[in-house]
Image (tube, rainbow, N blue to C red):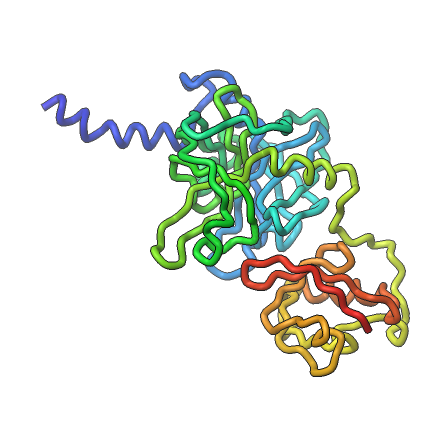
Length: 335
């Protein structure tokens, strides 16, 4: 009878241990140190029915945070540290092709992960995943922890058309269940307490319905994170940029862009139609393309798009970055 009870309760106990690890957990001090470097992020949610929370991790002592680029960042998100401190954050920059964003909070001397130049894990290595999984860890509770291994290191490009994501590169396939709400942007840690990767967004095989548990390797993120922090790569609009008179500046109509109805303050910059014989038509833009960047600056809404176009002389070319299905495409509009 005792053996039967043990057999029935052991999976429950294991599941409970996977969800939250306290400072006294037997996995060691480095697990608790990892939790202190992971943050909880709360944002807009963007669309009805989607969770407005995810995870991130500190990458500098000045409060820079790496996280997954997603709808949660439609507004400037709120960040909750391990000790319960709450901060409003600013989006410093993002890179759509890596599904990466970098935030900044007004904090100093924060514990952080150093990003290594070389991979720290290979297949078969034990890892833990630390995240705000299911928003279980609220307030100053430690982030949730799951144990597992690296099942393989695979090229996500081989799954094009099945798993839909703009990222095309090596990923860490994880032998643990991390593909759940709130986990995206969390940290995967190796047995030495080093950052091994960033948990990816929820990703499912469109044919079979199978979920993919994966992380983007830390070495693939390292250079871009450093460039964003250093200001060498920024996608944030400078509010001091001068606005030109309407007759001298660009606007969607002049470029041949018919946008979807702008009904909300944060309506995304989706193209509804393209005017014939226009700059947009010559650049082969299509309906349902989503404008992500204009001249390297982030477009988080149609209003941002219109404001930024007002700063560009209509005699000048306009450089766009658009998302078409799972592709990230550079496009030049020539008036």
